[in-house]
Length: 451
Ligand SMILES: *Cc1c(COP(=O)(O)O)cnc(C)c1O
Image (cartoon, rainbow, N blue to C red; front, top):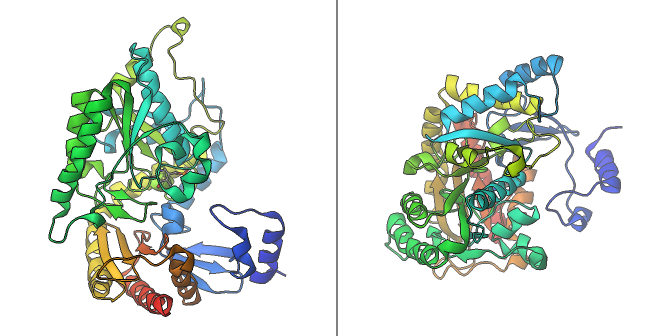
């Protein structure tokens, strides 16, 4: 008997889920999904849910996408996977060629890993190792922004800065230099995003000036600190940072794992600043939300610094068993073909405008909404206890969870970050579905702010 309840019971007997206090499932039912089509998920009792968070930001073109399905079926009939050292395959080559073509000029090398955190580890190690190969072994540190998120493995966690995920493990983590964020939620009344971001950049500049000799790289999430409550900042910060990194001889690592592939209005967020980072980390949308894969794009300068006789021991001896997995790479190729053939970036521009019109406008004046902010296909609503002072709700009250539960009961999957409700839908969402989303979010907020 395959009902929600029967499957949930079996699940809870043997599974341990990510980012979850499993005890919560004594009161909140686990939802077993039977089928996904487009923006909709269907459970075993026949309920449907609009996937407004793209299944943790990975899904771009809907579940069960016909083009990606067809590509994967073809790949499956030929090659599922092969060792990626000494051997290669066509899908890995094609995807790398396409990534070199579509990422900012100068990113000419692609190193694969199998998830976002692993890509961050690769970029950190490569940066450090580059300086070491250059005889600059004193460069061992990384600069990160407050409120940033770069993944959960120990290196990635160390360069992240969300206390909820990080604090427990602090004794295990390498030391990093944290710089206050340009997060524009904290700008003064009347101050523009650009002015605030420029003002905040002074702190970064000072830090670089002071520590350049011991710093390998600055790592940032361009434009939106996603896991850090979808906090946003101005593109001018990226331009200033690129200039300063050049000036102080420090690498710039752009973690576009969440914001890449069209989320911010351009294929990559760095495009808006017309900058090329030294390393660009990609994952999440890379396979259209189908399979785990990540890539670190880097420059020829970086590549050449490792290229020498084996006996010099200057090679980058890092690997993952599933590096360059053929199925995942093929899904990546199919994903980039959809971008190239179906005018997705232009379509997203009008979708983002619709989202602003049907969602944002309405929530501004809500007595418990401090801010509605949007960057491209990411829209966030910040709930607070007191609109005037921006005093937040105590986290223990878990208002966001109330929105989550209410929305589920109305057939919408929202998964707020604390008290921040956000929409990050697949790019195939329709205007009617956005209207539904806005309506359910509104009712959910009304429900959650009641005493
Ligand atoms: C999700 C995320 C990661 C980590 O990726 P995983 O595949 O979950 O390990 C790293 N950086 C950013 C910006 C992310 O959003």
